[in-house]
Image (cartoon, rainbow, N blue to C red; front, side, top):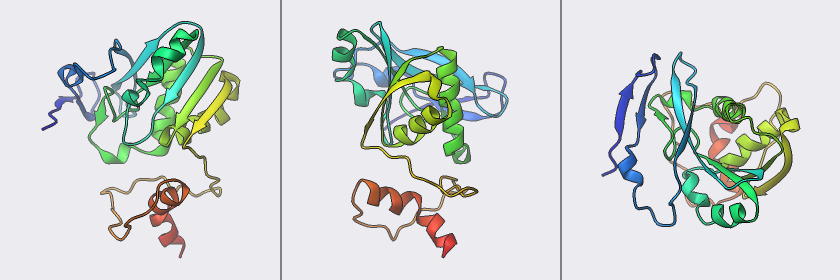
Length: 207
């Protein structure tokens, strides 16, 4: 069983979250990296700890994972890219990997994750970033690159997208409690999967 340690508002805030014990990350294959952390506002008066891998020196390559994954996804990319003369930074999104995991599902909105990554970039003073992103990392990363393009020099997208959304619409909003569409079966990965999952509730409301 995957046990987690619950810490309730220990940094002065009211948000409840879980922090996976360090022991759960010991002896992982091909993952010898030293953990690094920054603290970001939890949007409720407290702080959340965000984990990242930081290897090598030189121009910055920021890798962003998707769902359901964490920095472990890039374990085989980090060493060769670092050896090539780059500083490789791989962040764990809030709620995943070694980063803190808010219990309240409603906090995990698209906009909130964008704010957390913006604060992460600001805390590390990252500039001239080469962004490598995939899956939800692309939706978050590409939006930030659009908002703050002066921080980015290159973008590499793998299995990613950034859909055009009509003004005033937000298909990424998470209902509370979360509603699962059990009618969706055998959908393919890629754009068709994205439309089926993310837009299912949105389309129903429009029809």
